[in-house]
Length: 398
Image (cartoon, rainbow, N blue to C red; front, side, top):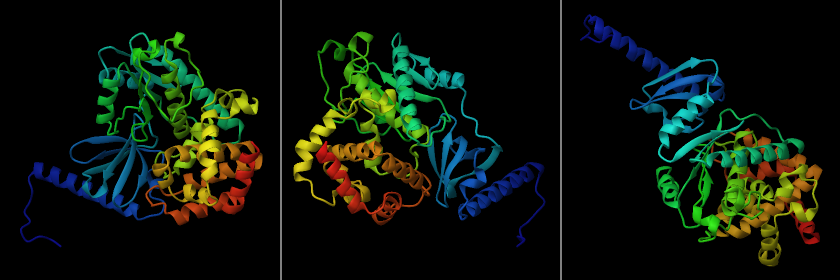
């Protein structure tokens, strides 16, 4: 409809009007695409420029619906934007272009300046204390190679990371806690490190007092396989943190897990705890059983969890993550035991690969209710009750 108050605009007004119409068309097209099943495919692989009026973001669309547009920016961080509030949306390149390692190194130096340096390897950029970051970089890279090989030789679908992987090692617990707060992660006395799905970074600290034994910080979620000794300048406690969190980071960057998908906790932590022992990561797992098992997890499972465990518990951890929140150590021990059982059986290992593919193919913008979780699980593994009997018999024989 033509407005009755219409008048010939000035050249400046005309330029603004054209921009506004273009912006309106772009956003309307975006919302229209959001209604399609192939929403992400419309922008797949390309680089987009998106503005919410306060900030402009460059990256690629990784998930999209009428309410939310999820981007992976050029650092590899996830940004979730409110679609109706967007001011502009433009595809600027047919190919996603992450920051080059040199650019990323420069940005990290600006973010962490005094007392820190950045060291690089084939896959990692590690920001750490001056004179120590290179040691950490070597450790992260070694774990990356072990974890990638572990999955590859067992038939998992492995891809190369799209962006350089980042780890930040703080000199003190105080600096680490301050970073946690900025990163919206709740710090606790036992927390030595974490992997963030949002930033795609591993963050941790290595207090010099850990090397001297002056202080020992508990972390019930980690094991002690001594990959790096204190004589190498990295405390064993910190090395254990690096191992656990790096297995998460690598898994989410080589195609094992999706950072947007609602992957059940038992699966994420099961794979991470299976990979904690050096005997499992090295030599393609061809070590003695005693070298491959996670002693901390198997001891808790057999002595604490198994005597009180009832049949049907497997369905509980598959259908919901609540068991982990309520019974953390039991949850971790069962996740390790069940995942170890699956990986030790070649047929069940193939089922696990299928299960990961099913989860990865889900629309991350759609809720994942308990009923659907169980259906997806049984689509890959068959009847869950029969599988549970098989699993418990295996663990009892062990």
